[in-house]
Image (cartoon, rainbow, N blue to C red):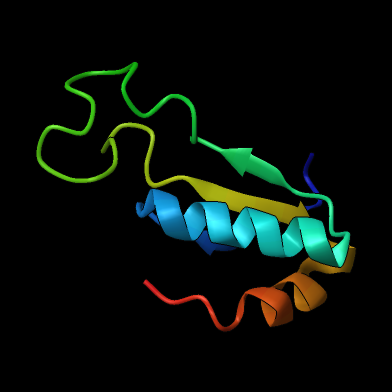
Length: 78
């Protein structure tokens, strides 16, 4: 997994869902990290919309797909 790069990071679950849908539609494979573990450590999302221990959920793709993924996701803003 060392050739994966982060192309999107957001604590907004709606934006994360839109980003995943856009990548799915473009046929770009990705890994969503820290998405399902936000409430498992420490105090969860007590003072923010993400867990400070795990960080905000992020989407990672292979380096070969990074530029194309960034183009697909370029219209999504937090």
